[in-house]
Image (tube, rainbow, N blue to C red; front, side, top):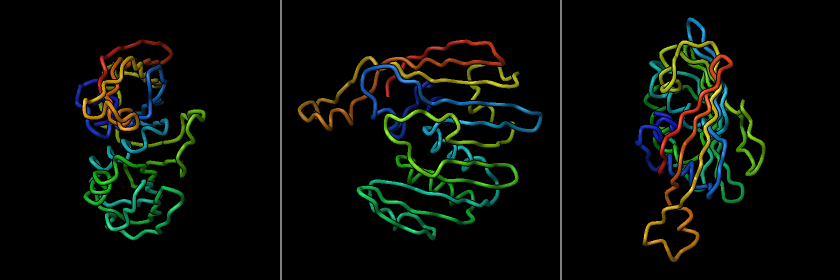
Length: 225
């Protein structure tokens, strides 16, 4: 389940919390998704914050081995955790593994489970699933690229993205606005500013601005993650 749907269905976890932990009080347009639907499948483009989720969605649904190529980036030495061959390097505080391998669905799920809190910049190529992701983490404060990720998925993947609006469409654009009004800090971190910001739950609203074949609707959900 992707992070936007988790917020809507109040099933957030540590991975969702980490996505929001970078934000203070305010309004943020994030989780941008462009969908187009054909008789046989869906094509999508998405902002960078979808990259981990898209890899996880493919890993959960793909039925056979596929070519996986790209980078995993994390702020720790994770070489022993990989389980696949890689070119490993360190730059500043970040470690990078460059991967090019044929992976089973089980291997892909393992990669996702281990590194869903980090940066998965991984491409997947198979008959039914294709995922392409830019090869560098966006710079903080930079313009949001709506095509940081692109994918081709089977039609039955549509429920994952169009879970709260009519699926009878040709094209849809979804902008998810995080309206953060309060940071709920656990008591044990109240005297530690850095940890308080990191561990605080972000509370407010998620506003989904959904444009379906040119017609705009808005949906609002309470948010705490």
